[in-house]
Image (spheres, rainbow, N blue to C red):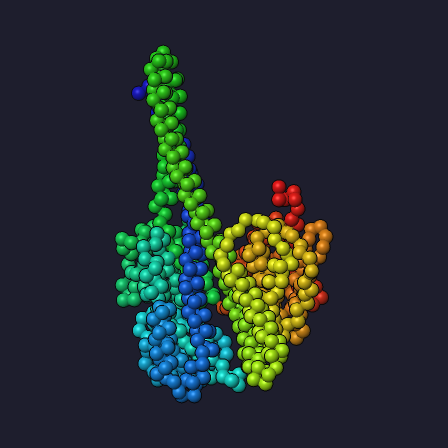
Length: 582
C-alpha cells in the first residue's frame, strides 16, 4: 500500500468525520429551532383552547347569577312553588344545554332540580358553601347528585332582608363541551389539582391520572402504557405509546388556569420538526460532500477538465432542485402564516365584541334601573291624566301627556345607545362628534353610577368637537374606562367620577376616579393583566388592552397616572381637519 494512498485515505476519513459532525450540529440546531417554533404555535393553540373552555363555562356562571334573582327563588326559600321551579329549571336546562339546574336552601339541601332528585345534601361541597356565604362558587368532578363529569357554578340568592336564603346551582356537562372539540389537530387536555384529566379532546385520556411527583399519565385501571420523558433544549418531550390518535414523540406544554382551577396541557407531534431538521442536515451533508468531491476531482483529474465540468453541472442541477423544493416549502409556510394572521385578526375582533358585551353585563343593573324609572313615571302620569280628564281639567291632562312623551324619548335614547354599543362594527375612521360620544357613554354608565352612589362630574359642551375615529369603537373606549373607574371605587368611602375635555395640542379627555389608584401603571395596558382577584367575574384583563389598541388604530394614545386620591386616565385623540379629510 503506497504512502500516497494512505495519505488520501486519512484525508477522506477526516473530511467525512468533519461532515458528520457538521451535519449533526446542523440537525441539532434546526431541531431546536423547529421545537421553539412548535412551542410558540402550541402556546397559542393552548391559549385559544383555554379561552374557549373558560368562555363556554362563563355562560353557565352567568346563567346561575341570572336565575338567582328570579322570583321563584323567594318562593322556594319559603317552601313553595317546587313544581313550577322544576318546570322552569328543566326548560332552562334544555335551552342552554345545562346538565342540571338546582336550588338549594340555606342548609345546603336541594329543594328543586331540573333532572336530579330533590332532597340531596350539597352542604358539604365547597361551591355551595361559598354561595351560602354570599359569593360565587364553583367546583368540578365526578360526584353526586349527578353521574358523569360536571362543572358546577353556584350563585347566592338573597332575600328581601339582604341575607342569603339559598343558592342556584348550574351544572355544565363536560361531554357536551367536548363534542365540539373532537378531531382537533392538537391533543389538548385539562387536569385538576390532583392531576386527573377532567376535559380533553381525546376521549381515550378521560380521567387518566398523573403519578405523584412525576410526569406522564396512567389510566384509571392502573395499567400504565409505555411512557418516558426527557428534556431537549429547555423543552419537555414525552415518548408515548398511548394509541394511534396520539403522537409517539410529543412536545408537552402547560398553562395554568386559576380562574377555573384547572391546568391546560397540550401534546404536539415533533415528527415534522425532526423531518425538517433531517432534511436540513442532509442538504448540508450533501453540499459538503459535493464540495469535497469537486475539490478531490479538481486535484486528481486536472487532465480531464471536460468530464469534471460535466459532473459539476450535474451536481449543481441537483442542488438547484433541492433549493427549489426548499423555496416551495417556504412559500407554503408563508401562506400558512398569512392564514394564521387572518384568523388572529378575526379573534381580536371577537375579543373587542366580547369586551363590549362584558361591559353591558356589568351595567345591566343600572340600565334596568334607568328604564324602570321612566316606565313607572309613564304609568303614574297616564293614571293622573285619566283622573284630570274625569275632573274636566284637559290642560293638566295635556301636561301629563307631554311628560309621558318626554319619558318615551328618554327611553328611546337609552335603547338606541345600547343597540349601537352592542353592535359589532368595523367602521373606517370618519369625522366623529366627541361631545355626542361622551354624552352617550356617560348616559350608559349613569344608571350603575347612581346605584353605587357615585357622583358624576361631567359638563357636556354645547358645540360639537370633531375628532378622527369610529363612533362605536371610540364609545367603547370611554365606556370601558368609566366602568373600570366604577369598579375601582367599589370599596371607597367617597365615590366621585370626573369626565372632562382638555382643549389643546393634543386634545385630551381625562377620566378621574376616587379609588385606590393603579398599582402598576406601566403594566395596566398589557393583555391579561388585572388587579382584580383571581376568579372574579369582571373579566380576564383584556378591556384596557383592547381600548389601547383601538386608540392606536385611530392615531391616538391612552395614558394613566395616579393622583392623591384615585387615578386619571388621559385619552388623546386626533382632531378632524380638512387636511385629514383630504
